[in-house]
Image 1 (spheres, each protein chain N blue to C red):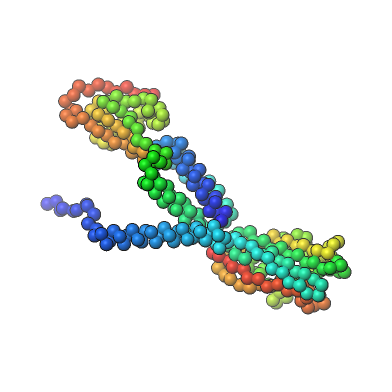
Image 2: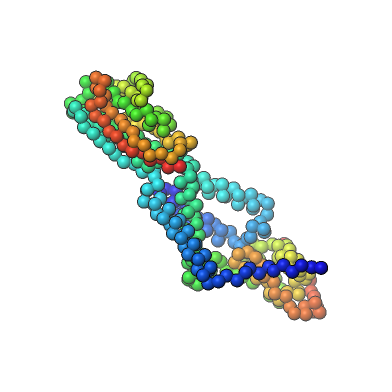
Length: 160
Length: 173
């Protein structure tokens, strides 16, 4: 029973930590952040299991995490109002070729990351982009202008 | 010449979708049952008490009814004798219990110890009052296989058991 209670508390703590830390995909993590994430997992496993290394204890912890995860996704699916709180909301990073620096600052997202994401989507110049959305899962969605290549491009200021 | 390779998944008929959904629900229910069993204490650790009387002695044992490998396993023995103890108190333990558990220490420590083929006999100095309380700091061996055996503890006097309790301890993997 202790394992289940600890696993539940740690699940809530993890959800809170990940919501507070912002939208980041694993692929966008720096090497240091990746190590931090792995270390966090190690610390969490010690917190949940403590000295219980039995198969039954491990199965209980895994089952608890899985059920809570299913519950979270069900609540998110069933109640629309809970979705922004549980999963986060998409945010617009760029509109009409102009980067919203306030949103970048809020998301703690360097412009370099946005530029890299633009290159991955085949965008040479942000002026060609109508809209960039940072989705709740940390992915970027690019909406390019139709016939944007014929428009007058203007350089985008880097945010340092 | 390029080969056409379809990347779209094949169409699933409604029966297949229903089957997949039912299987998932069964899985979720199985997980819920496991967690419910854990919350109810069925999967341990769980303790129980057992007692027996005989020849002016009362023997009470607090033991682990269900435990798991590697977990601390309490074992507390209380021997009560009306009018107090006239000499050393002798307790015999099932040897299998000691094979199953890793004992760290006794509180208080026994004055003497004798190992016999099927039991281990400990002699404790008599306490000041009518109750001798012994705590054994023990844990289930981390490599112990699952088991459900019965064990016994007895108060001995003149080489015979005057009060004996038997209890069942389940060790889960």
